[in-house]
Length: 158
Image (tube, rainbow, N blue to C red):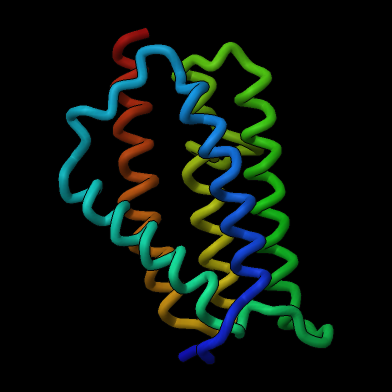
């Protein structure tokens, strides 16, 4: 279920998540309009954001431990988080259009939404924290759903 205690690995993940999002606040894609988002998806996204954030720092199960085959879950999670950072670099170096924002990376659709959700899901599996797994699923339904909705709307405008 999870051992309560501070997770420096979870904090590191949150820093990797929040820093580019803070930069994005001043570099939104042209024509970005969050109005009209599905309220159910928005509720799931917000609940997932809060839950993932809390789980990331309050369960010590995410911290490093001696190497085993189980550590491959953490390695896979960190790989996805690294791809997420690469996706952001690509976005910030682009013309910052909606097409750039909702693009895929290495075949991962709406990579800016999908990669961090999958990274936190695998982090939950690595830590064997069911609460993080559930939080990541809830976040994924809302966040990826909203990004897919925006991508469909922006494709209709192109």
